Image (cartoon, rainbow, N blue to C red; front, side):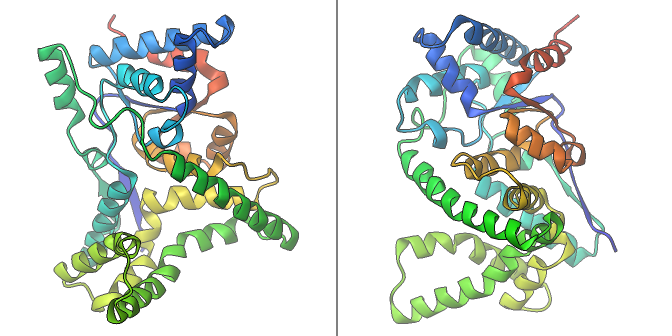
Length: 336
């Protein structure tokens, strides 16, 4: 039985913007951007704000603040995103992934051939109700501090990861490893890691060596084990969770399938791994499956289209060089 996943798109078109848009708008506000570069971005901002206020568009922020937090123009960049999104935010990517895994487990136990993922799963709060409330009261609040106060740490970690990933890419190119083989390995990576991770956690628990980091790292796996038990899934326990993680159901969910395809493309491609690539995969993985429109950099756009992720998940993807085309698509949403 071939298992598929389908994401229900929001009833109002949704736009996801690359971090660079907010950063460049912040620079434009400080007169640090050439007029020729600032003008189209300011026009995009005006159009997006107008459509969002009219409830013709949902513009969301994901975890872009990890890329500009604790950096120069942090507060200005946060303010630019807030003006375009009206404070509408996706749920945390880990929470989105966890909820998709629960739906995958539900479908496996029920013997379904399709996993239907509601669009509301991607949000903690209902964005339609938020926009309606903003329209009534005439103001909004942005949840959380401006930017991410600890944004520097994940950026540095991803920069370090990029060095390792480049070494892997070179090895894969030298060995002639195909995209398809790497893709299968990426899809199965969590199933390979889970039993070892659980055994190590139990060992540290018995020896009294658990750290806060260990406990946080096991939060997701422990929830998976609890959900599997609640479903009375078979086989029991960790063996059952591993069975799910190796199944077609886990392979089908976008939270696994999209990053697997992006990483397989990066690790078998002919372009050097850049320090921005890990962040791109992290941010784009939830955005591609839920948004109608995605604006990203040209390398990421090529990667998405090369692997037909835009077609698979129903997103129209633009590079930052294609602002006029995105503007035309958004203008079609304006009232007649």
